[in-house]
Length: 92
Length: 139
Image 1 (cartoon, rainbow over the protein chains, first blue to last red):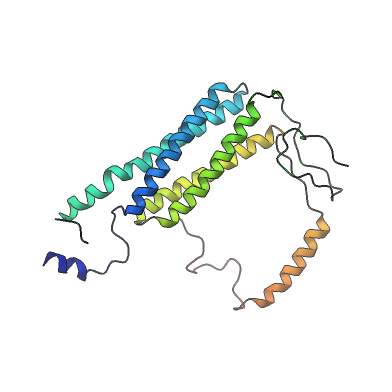
Image 2: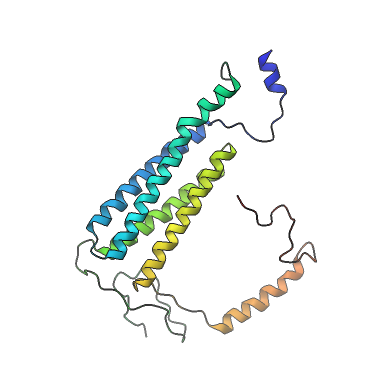
């Protein structure tokens, strides 16, 4: 019954849930961002030129910010959707 | 005759066919020994940002729902801006040089590709006409 109602809905866009591919890309991208942030910070500490040092620190902060944006998708997307829909189970 | 400016670790091909001057700032000093120096560091960071734009370009194209798409596109955009900032800093430091194309070559190409516009499948659409599905929009 519930399942039939779901199938009858025609969506113009995918629902706000993460696909397996999304999850794979997110975890990849999180690793990229963390590595980039660490590298930028490490380089900043080694730089003698103040402009280069400042730019490296800015990059570090940007990558940490991006990390948080991406991480947020792992913490909210799925749970929120299933709470809103009171989805009983995954469909196959 | 190639000039020697920027010959150390120059990442760009020397261009010899132009009589126009090279666009380049005087090179800021940096340690030229075997050690990893400031120029190496900023160049490595630029390579990292460039690499990230490739990764995020694929990611954004593969995203499922709209919110994720928006966020990843935003990250891609900011990463491009970061590349640009690093490039500008390197240019300011004199670690990048540009070579202007000869105006006669540019004029020649402009004429050639202007002529190709007669091959447009539809005529009369102004360059800045709005309202098309793929005209500029805010994401």
